[in-house]
Amino acid sequence: MQKDIPLKRDDSAISTPLHSPARQSSGLRAPLLLLGAILLGSSAFSHSETPLVNKHAPAFARVDLHTSRQIHLSGYRGKVVLLNFWATWCAPCLLEMPRFVAWQRQYAKSGLQVIGVSMDDDDSPVRPLDRKLNLNYPVVMGDEKLGELYGGILGLPVTYLIDRNGVIRARFQGEADLGKVEEQIKLLLSAPRPVSHPQ
View 1 (cartoon, rainbow, N blue to C red):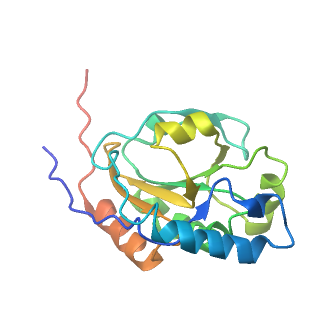
View 2 (tube, rainbow, N blue to C red; view 1 turned 90 degrees about the vertical axis):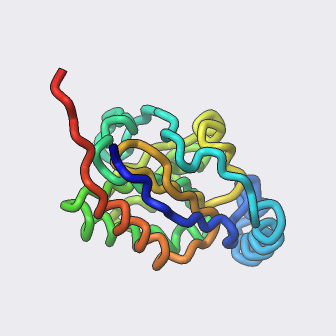
């Protein structure tokens, strides 16, 4: 039996509201994102309950924008998964994504798999940004239904860390301390791989 790994969640950081006015007005985007993130981050998201932590991650299948093939979250069982909900209009999201690229490169051999879920309305702004940032991990399109499976994605970014057995071990909302996220990734990667029993 695998020992539970105590991880701390950090959902008190600044987040960008999913239905932010900044999505409609690009000229005021940065100031509005910052203001909305501070106001919402300090109240609605400060100490939110995260009922998914320590439960199996909800299953989903989506088309990877890189390969045009459908990926299943369950197909990554045995790996540590960083599942990141983001959008092209979310400033904090764009700041952390280059770090995810670096982690995918650095920890892939140890069993890390980053998966990005864009919450944009369609993929037209996502594809150019994907190329610009040289994302080296699968990117799928999310929607309200997928967001609801993960407790309702009301602000971005939202990142889940899922252990090798498919159990959510941490949730980060808003502009998280990436040093802490990386520490928890390392902790999860150091856990024994699940033993598969022949049928």
